[in-house]
Length: 363
Image 1 (cartoon, helix red, strand yellow):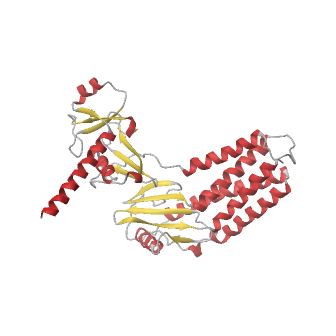
Image 2 (cartoon, rainbow, N blue to C red):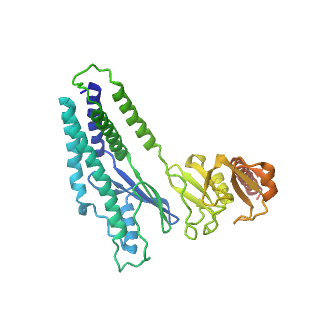
Image 3 (cartoon, one colour):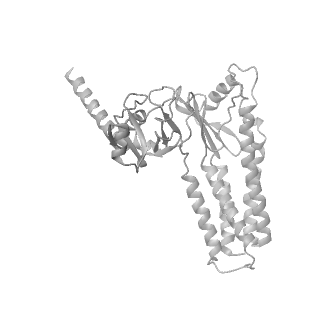
């Protein structure tokens, strides 16, 4: 087996040990009554709150909607996972030292299956907590479940549930990608390569690069825009219920949270008043194709259109590429873009703040 392959196995095995030092997963809940959010961290051997009383607060909320309490000592997987992680790491190091192709294929196959089973078990755990509800709960909504997403963000009542890997989880994902890449290489190659110089065959190099690329892509992953839940989603700026998909907008934060808006003017006001480092992307609804999202940079905005928008600014968005004369003939107004609207709103807010400070000093 190529020496570089053995090194990859050893590195992947050692990285698995990071789960003992860092949390595996982070689940947070955001709502108006919890502006800083509350959350829990899932460790290899326990569950804790992100902040001191977060787990108690989550259990308190769960009680009202009929979900079972999250009791770490009642979760059997937390007793087994430390031993499983240790076994994966130690056997991986032994396989790397032995250098046997067959042994490595067997080990990588078992580890890959174990990691897949772990992902399924986590999903099943979330499913049970979100679906098996106490029928005598204080709050009961027929047909509604409270299962958080396995990965990403999800609106649950007035909460936004976010579920993403923490440091230990990303380390485990990295190890899984490396092990899977090594397994794929060893299965598809037939040539005997027991002990070779350090220079890696092209296929191994490709597998290592693929593993690194996958890790980088995973670490940079963010949720994209989602379909608006009309009559349920509310505007993050004005708190009105969203009812018209033609004018909707969404802002994706750096943490992957999706902020929804009933009108483009509300999204512009929100972005203009926020730190630009907090949001990743802005999306606007295509007025002519409701339900279709346009990235802010690809959107043509009509300001002062003959069609009124929910907040009265008469802003509507179309995909760039349309003939300007045709657009203004259909909708009137003038043409602009999202960046210009945000810049104008930010300048207006700065001027207003300056005037307020001057007035305060005069008084």
